[in-house]
Length: 108
Image (cartoon, rainbow, N blue to C red):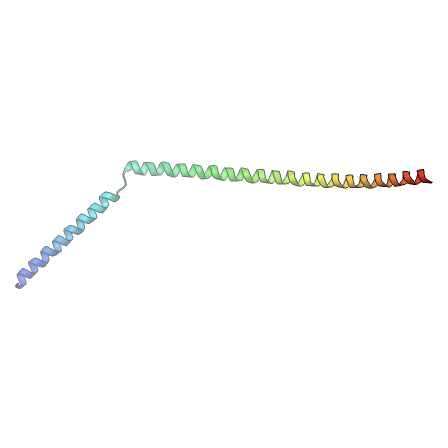
């Protein structure tokens, strides 16, 4: 193989490699390209996701407000229960004192 044949063979090999690379690139672009309908579908999905996130945020806000209201009502109810229990304790103590006083009056 002389110099000219070597250059021609090398040129042919490089040209074939170039053609294979170009063909592979074309195939990859062909299979990975996004059509306009797919872009529209992605836009619709993004809009739906955005609306779902807004709905979720509103639900979280509502639940936080309800939790605060219920916690406030629970605190008020507990305070009323403590007051009622204190009043009942005082009433029992007073009734016991009256019973003791009446027993002393009847005995003496």
